[in-house]
Image (cartoon, rainbow over all chains, first blue to last red; front, side):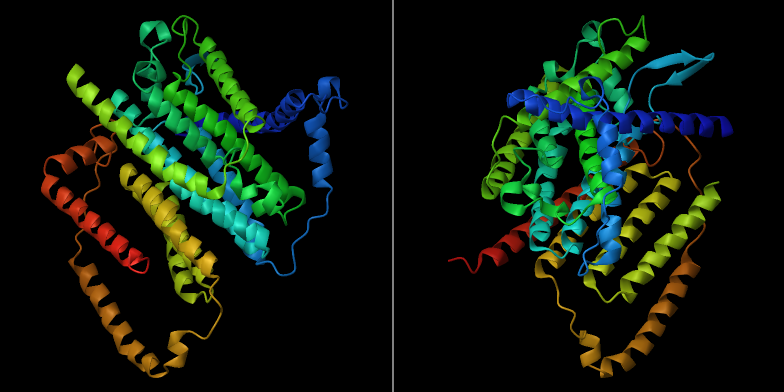
Length: 337
Length: 168
């Protein structure tokens, strides 16, 4: 028991460290890619290629004045950022980063833990993280913040349905809710039999769009549409509370990339992982990186939806398509077996 | 370890449940209810009912309570004197009713027999996993399951009819 606890603690510490570093550099990556797309140079002064920029930004934000509006609902205003950040961090304990590697004479599985309802756990955390945004909007007592919070709750409820239904195809395909099992079921064809190639291209498309909306990324970033709502739900936040919102959003972005990879793009599977288990970690990281890049690319390419378009698209296009995907997958599965 | 965790979650759960009643602000009450639901789900996990625990969070904490919070935020309910304070007579009715409720609670507690916990089992067929819940649901309990879904569908249609009445 103590052995197991120690292993968990070490794994959680390693993942937390890696994740927070990744979040800091995702911000830099986003700014550099944005600059590249807009034909600018971007932040390149702090350290080589601007690599120390996250440290400079962090220091600056820590020393900013922490303001609590006098009319705010204080308790909720203070705890709202944690409601967004903690669920998005908790997602990472079930994500399989790689297969098993041998370290110090011990077989170590490259995920903190796995359980029977892993995928439901991820969906549950995704649905709880809306509280952070909604409460931040309400407790700030500012009309722009409130509008942002309301939009976020309505949007996340609408797109959660499509998100949940789009993964049912995966469940039919792999017969398990356990993320480790889902990855292992995609190991055929020399490690390339990924769900997206086999039967779920439509499911992936729906999942990807819904995940963009769940992570509040452009073209679905209406909760913080800066041209109409100043900064949306975090208008009143400053200093470290603002940082926590930023970290939560980038954690969600990386989580969306990691879940898409795990469910549809074979997770850590790839040619040669049987012989060299350490290669699985490389495959997983590379795939997640590609997804994060695509998310950023989309942000600076597409304009924002109008709010009624967003709602109509979620309910009238994505939801029926997701149901259609379930019917097709189930029928094909029944005919093949 | 398990006992410590149980005590922590049980205390938080009861405290949050009390807080639902004690708060004046409807939003704070709603959030306390979310707290109760989440700690209850943790207790379900300790009873090895992972599936129910996950569904509890997704359906109640993640969907229904988000809608509650949404409506409370949208209406931004003004802090007026509550119904009870306007109708003083109701206070005196509360005492016998509370007594009745407590008596009922004790009666039910006396009926409950200690149940046997399913043994710790990591296989996919163990009680409480998605596999066992699904198998039960689609074989032994198929009729109740289908009847419930029809009932819910009827409720949805009813809600649609009521909501659309004012339109034309």
